[in-house]
Image 1 (cartoon, rainbow over the protein chains, first blue to last red):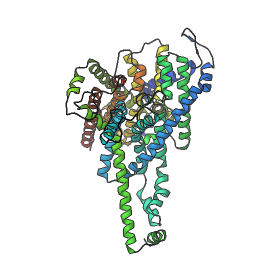
Image 2: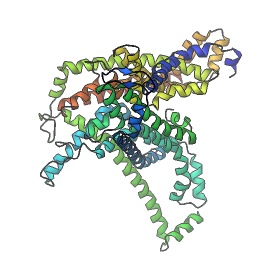
Image 3: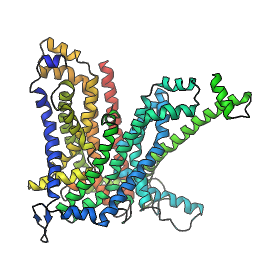
Image 4: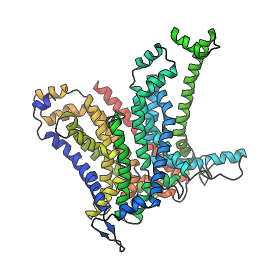
Amino acid sequence: MGSSDAEAPGARPWILISPALGAVGLLLVVPLCFIAVYSFWLRTATGSEQPGFYLDNWIEVLTDPFYRDILVQTLRIAAVSTLLCILLGYVPAYFIARSTTRHKTVLILLLMLPFWISYIIRTMSWINILGVSGALNAFLLWLGVISEPLQILYNEGTVILGLVHFLLPFMILNIYVSLDGIDANLVEAARSLGATGWQAFVEVTLPLSLPGLAAGSLLCFVLGAGTYVTPMVLGGPRDAMFANLVFEAVITQLDWPLGSALSLALLIVLGAVVMLYTRYAGIGQLARSFR
Amino acid sequence: MSVVAKSAVEKNAPLDVGGLRRMAGRLVSGWSLIRAFTVLVYLFMFLPVAVVVLLAFNANQFGSFPMEGVSVRWFVALWHNDAIVRAFRTSLLLGGLTALLSTTIGVLASLALVRYDFPGKVLITTALVAPILVPEVVLAVALLLFLRWLEMPKSFLLLLLGHVIFTLPFVVLIVQARLVAVRRDYEEAAMSLGANAFQTFREVTLPLIMPAVFAGIIFAFTISFDDITGTLFWKPGGVETVPTQIFAMLRNSISPEINALGTVMVVATVAVPLAGAAIVRRMAAGLR
């Protein structure tokens, strides 16, 4: 307020923000409206599109068991990955938050590194480890435990593994931000009032870290459920996720109306999760991890 | 203190004087368990990538274990692979332009959001951050469909616009956070000394938020350089970025060449931000 008000900003903020608004409007909002409209069009037998208001695509998306199964599978994979990220991520986040400043800097810098390392490389790196001629099989063969290489790759388990590997830094960072903001005096107060270390953790630290845990979970779930590449690289033919269906419909079959309905369905499901989250936590928590 | 001791005694009935010491010992071992777990998680995050780098130097023709000596032949092969060199050039150009555009737009928007009050601000802030939460596939399909409706073919421009919309939220979040921390007094002082709004921005505000601008540039570049899903949807036929090139090569099977390419990427994407961070730190130190 203050000076900027006195100076009567007038049109200036609008000029400053118009390029960003224009970008988001033209490249996000309008295109989203387009898929909404397109999802009610129809693809004719000749491959052209019939404008109009047809519910055929939506009926197909909502009733075809094939799509329903893959939607359930997608949500399951994302949920399991998120849960594993919580289980694997909480302790390191706690460790970082309780470390001395110097260690903290190093640990956080290391945590940021995976963000910089290409996602496709981190995903395919597991082929080197779990593949038929990968490190694990080579090791087991060398030990003599097995005589034939094991088929470990290309199933739902390895898709989840790849996702956890990709999502874990997001989770740790979000939990850490929450833990780091907790006033250490609160824990000490609990201890001095007779709580054991564990009790103090359960009664004080854990509840206060829930906002970060929730933000991390949301991020992991949404990113996980929208994945296209991980199932392509680490999954088998039956481990397709919803994004793969969208790609298949749009790029391979050129069925734009169906592809629009499918992507809108994904957006609505994940949007509902985000809504649920913002109702309880507010969008601000997500922004905090960037400070 | 006495309460703690008492509760400990109540919990572990057969404790004697040594009990307290043992309890302390358990606390320490609890901490070391936490540390051991943390080390394991960090190993989980980095070991697979380390294996990629290791295998890139593998002399073995199939790029698998056991290693048969050290060789740089796969890096040489990369250098002579036209498709890969071309993909690198595309990625660098795309990342550079994305960073430039996205950061410019993002800084202007952040200035408006932090320095001015206007109706609809909350809604606009949400809209600017929204692309983070829209699944990449949905965004990709939507933009592709829109351009198709405009009868624009897939092009480098589409890739660039798409990458800008992916990276813009990150730039806005980073720059906004920094801008909030910059006190307005400096700007007001410059204004009262007769500087106009643009001079104030160029001479006072911009230098103060330079670390965040730099961070925004690096962030935008790296996200663009690393992007694969949107790029797979948008890229015109025959154009590959480094990630889509790797993805295409993976169709056959994993080869030592992919590992070598991965190593180059790791070095590039890790070294660039680290150098950037060093520069930012020096800038921040210079400001103090």
